[in-house]
Amino acid sequence: MKEIRIDYSKCSGCRLCIEHCPVKVFEDRGDGRPKPERISACIACIGCMAVCEQGAIELVSDWECSG
Image (cartoon, rainbow, N blue to C red):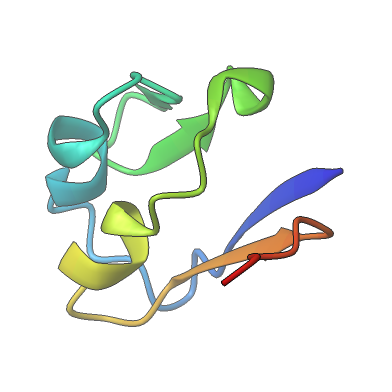
């Protein structure tokens, strides 16, 4: 199971996460802030977390990496 948590009190509405997502998980809520609409498409690349300068995005997943 995947969950994308967004702390809107931290989010600046810069749209970097929306623009960076390779599988277009996010939609713009109308104020530049992301709304996770297609969570099932998420590939857990954590790119949205990496580009978020405010630290407003958290990806919670039960996926395990095998190495």
